[in-house]
Image 1 (cartoon, rainbow, N blue to C red):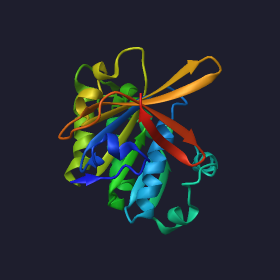
Image 2: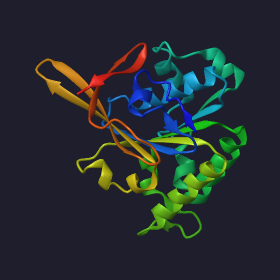
Image 3: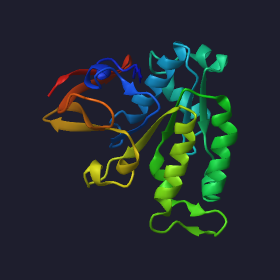
Length: 230
């Protein structure tokens, strides 16, 4: 089973869309469009009857997020009013309290919505969390165990989970999150003279065929649109 990404041109690269009940990582530098892709996918899915939730881990106010969203054509306040789309910003105090506090928040505020797809933006905030009961930062494989348990909460409920990560200098397929997800999309901005060119590449897709290589994409008021293969 597959679910459409609701991103123009992306389903063709995915050979039909995202695999149902999968975890997707979208990586890129600031300004590459990670959040835009996520919110566009959620709003369009909600317009088509799915229940969706966007979770900001940056402690941004909901008003600030909505102000940014209002610049895009896919934004629809009535979808928020209907309850089919939820936007939540996790307070830094919750994150500082550690892993149990985060699990508790997600269980009480996200999973109770019975969503079809959820975005956590960005997942990399969790790299600095502490063990709630031992009051110390995670060591060794403890972060991986936390993430695996978190992702399992969504998998068991057949929820598509999309997470974002800031791109680092190291290849994405060597980062700690890449081993724990089913699909990896990378976004890249390339400056050539006075022009910026944007490229999307599918690095990994478990249980699915896909079209490899870099694909140009545009990001406008209409949202993100994948244009052609590089």
